[in-house]
Image (cartoon, rainbow, N blue to C red; front, side, top):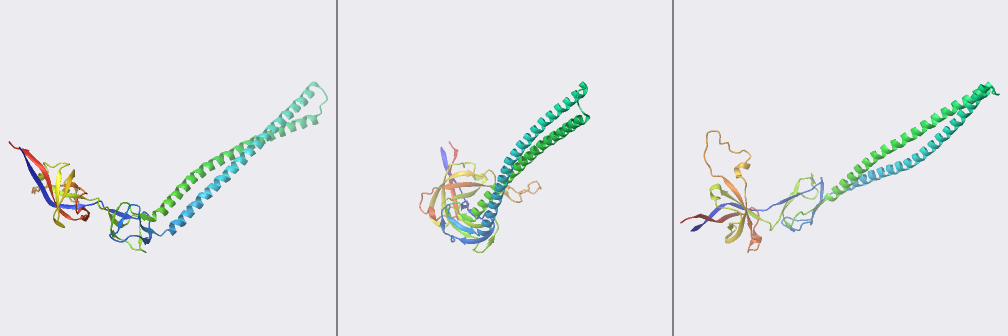
Length: 320
């Protein structure tokens, strides 16, 4: 038949995932809204950092964004004007081209008159030649002007690309400044009880410095360290009886939820080196996490750090 056994240890305590609340921005603590051991709800205001430097930074970010938007508006105006300038330059080029055609026709006419022996003075021929050369020069100038106006349009397009990038940067900076201003109001991340305050009004604190600890009661659990030779028959889901030093004679009930994947010595700052030749076998310990049933008497009296004794009910090997 199967025999029932119990594995117990007093190397165990109550734990909770305590939240160390810190400011996400640096500054002077302006107000503290909670006292030690006060119960808070997630989202409740806890303390505030002086807002004034961050309000100034926000105004500066808004001004920079407005300036870039104004520059983009100017660029749009210049772009529209430049399109008009290109149209004018193209029209001038077309007029210069027409004048060049007429001047060339007149030069050709004067040339034919001279060849045919008709009346054509040297002065008329030279005048037609000069007019054609002027027309060619004017056409070259008009073409160059069209090219120059189009280059200006390209420059404006590149400037617009830069301004758009500056706009994205300014918008991101504004969003960051708004976040920082919001971070001056620090709120409770979880329901629980304020365990300790590490700052007072008027203290200057750096971002990331833990200022208030919140114990998320009643979310507690037990960590029990069992010797490795006690765990051969222990597995998740097994029933656990728990006694608390604070409440002698009071029994609590829980369930094995997890077993550590490595022994405690594995995580030591200086792990043992057994390759030196001096070896003494020591039973290693593995941590077992035990979840407590919350609907039991005196559960609300449990606090992280309390010493406990745990007894895991296991089944032994079958015996005939």
